[in-house]
Length: 214
Image 1 (cartoon, helix red, strand yellow):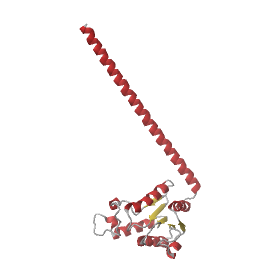
Image 2 (cartoon, helix red, strand yellow):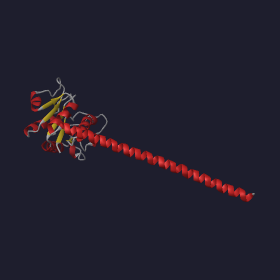
Image 3 (tube, rainbow, N blue to C red):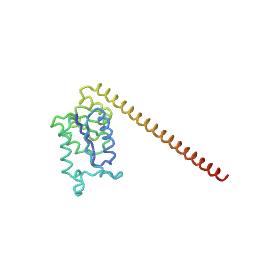
Image 4 (spheres, one colour):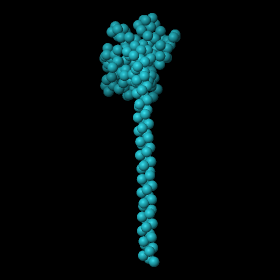
């Protein structure tokens, strides 16, 4: 299964700002059996409202994945293990040094880089970065399509299979919901029949009592 590393700014960004686009990319690529690795995985502890994420948390022993050594070790491992880097610089207001280093690792290892960045004005718009990236797109959606085209042997067939899988999943969900609805109707009917039987039994007993009194 092809692997993609989702690189992009983290320091100074909110938790959602770091994870939203990565979750979107991971979910869409998963439909095509492309595995996406995020440097934010297993870091839910960094969710703290809108407070920006720090460069590292060396003084917190409970956050080993976020120490300087932990960040470097796992991110470098991910870059080495992946087949392609998807680098998202859209909307960046400060240079992401860590992401730039990851792009350098990828180039040294001859890993293709798909760069997502505005046509002009981005703080990362430098010849070394744009020259290292084999592919560039102005939108995340376009970049994801590029990733598919680079990693998949037949994008058209993969897209058709993904559509078929989604249709089958939708049909399965519809069948489950229909089954639940029918079961609920059957239970409701059984409850009505039970209540009716109880009422008939009560009426019968009441009739017998009246007959004995008479």
